[in-house]
Length: 292
Image 1 (tube, rainbow, N blue to C red):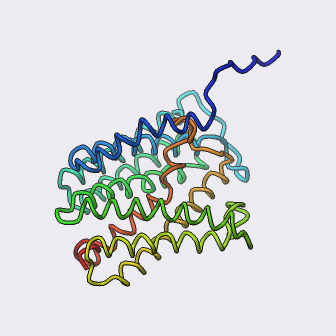
Image 2: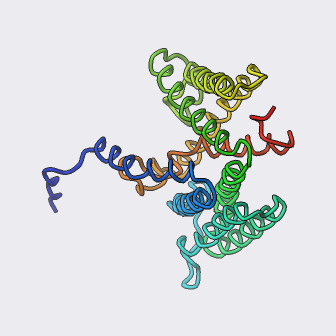
Image 3: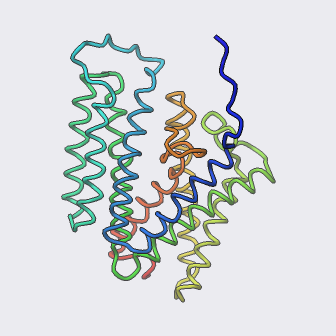
């Protein structure tokens, strides 16, 4: 059967990207600036989408090296499995936002992991572990972002610093990688990434740290600059981890929920890793790193 011709006047990919940004950017900025409970609700909503995307990707096809089990009429589909990660992620964000302790939130996530694994074992035994991993992969950063924004003294500044750092690392890595080129960083995972691009990402993140230190009149400029450079490495590691995950399951995008951009997980992979790293650093230091 002949394929229908493309409808004249359809939006280009660039136009879709611009329209998506025009809708999402003001909402995101407003939630960040207003803080609790608006940012908490935004994270919960995006977290629910990311949990759904992870489950969708894992269910995309069987792992090539492991045969898929014969489905039974009673086995739940992937949409049924997704219920447990979604509820866990939303619960982690809300629990953190309403003052739940890290131990309390962690216990809830653990319950979600176990329930997801049990249900997934019934539906698809070879990949039950992958479904369960997704719960932690999304729930931990969701809780971390909410916790960071809720900080009384540096919550807003810390979140702006983190987002600026991630954007600068992505941009610096792309520009330097495209301009300089050179040896590939991880060709089997992400063929376009280079060692020079990694250097550009670290430099971009360090520049944000340096700028933030001056804006906040930080007394330890080099500490924040070096910390930001290290977070630039973590941002790139998060990007590579997401690429490895998608390559393993043979998908290009985690979904098409954002026109022109793909899925939410495709856009925030580095942010997830950096958020957890900053939250852990804050806990070890006994306060926001911006207060050092």
